[in-house]
Image 1 (tube, rainbow, N blue to C red):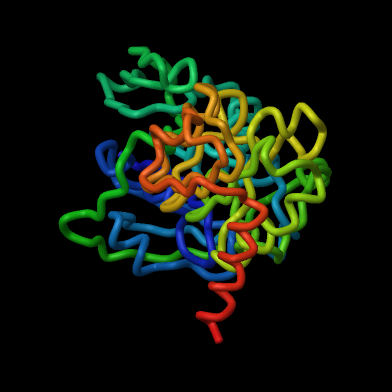
Image 2: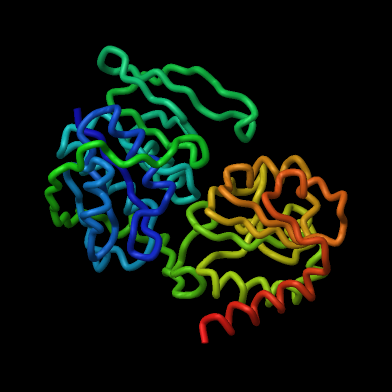
Length: 318
């Protein structure tokens, strides 16, 4: 059986969330990676079990176009006879699979942690509900399973025997309507890394003080190759857009490092950052709930700690 996996890139390499998707996909069949880029990270994809990689020339798309990406996946699924199409449970992964479901008329299952083929057209699933507070057992009946993989519950594990990968350059057949909605890639920060796939996230809460207080956090995120995330109260106050919110009603993150600045740590926020490998909290309140979840805590004023950290990083880099 053939499984297509949409692979998102971070700095030219597969994002951690996509590596998790590749790991889960190996249990379903032959893994065919789909990359919307001018070049493909062959060695990494092979190490995680991909036998084929389809390079979708970005010149034909001019940026991120969710419907065009979905149309491309639909064509490849037909061409390869795929029995499943997987993507990471990121904003892009969910959006593209939702478009793919609308184009093909197939159902989609989101935030899965386990997918097991069961006699042909059926797949048994375990998936997150209520921001991961519940696990649901479900059955997906469809000739092609459309599945997003929970970003914080499937470990990224290389294959025991790396595959011998074949690379195919694919030119999709797109209609003008498929390109009506497009987003240009941003060169700032971590090279356009999304909140869900970034390896470093610098979070800011009420303690930042206001919209202007995020400038040092942006600078720090740039020095660390990361992105900025925020708590719910920040978006409620209108200081930052909802797209940057970390939490149960925002984005669930799985970075190597989450630096939480001036964030108290409400349970909804903890649900969003629990997948971080390391949490460092900076807070003036020694009783802030997030300190109980942090690997390291700095009890102090972020307006003093962050500038000092920025200067230390700049000094270290010469």
